[in-house]
Amino acid sequence: GDMAWPRFGRSCVPYSRKCTFYDVCRSGRMFKEMFTEREPDYVDEAQETAPDGVTVLNVSRLNTFRACPELYRLMYVKNLARSVDEETDPKQLVFGTAIHEALRAWYSGKPNKAGTWKPKLDDDAAIEAARTVFREHPNHDDNADEVHTSGYAELMLKRYFERYRKTDRELTITGVEVPLTAEVHAEPPFFRKG
Image (cartoon, rainbow, N blue to C red; front, side, top):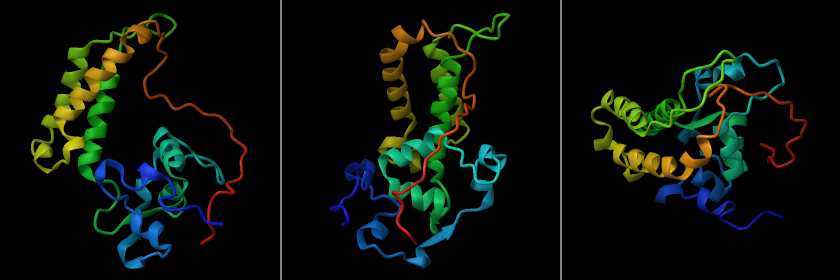
């Protein structure tokens, strides 16, 4: 039988906002006027270059599936987006880009002959990288919810640095945001038909 509602708890109302597909999951009905198929350019480059029948999984896709398989199905199998906010909310994209750039700066270093390096773990350079992204979008904080502000990004980064500094200084870095590949043989029995 069907699972009880909500199926995946916190995923249905993350950050005190209903999931994009909340009404669909809650009612079990698709409201076609509310959704559109995402543009082909929304698909990431790795997926576009993958052989036919091969699905590329990135961290976002994996985390989406772990949080809610139904959300994964609607977003990545059905390729749907809310008509009113096509694709991803820009303030979330700015926030995510700022975090990625900060971490890229934090883990940067001077490569040795083997092409690897020890990370600098420079907090100031990382925070400045995030601030640069936010400066490129001067009205970002005016329109952002409390979780996607520049101030929250800095707080989140500082806590990350505190937590991982001791262990990550021992890392040998081979690259930052380098795609890794592995073959996974699995059939998705968890998707509803339709």
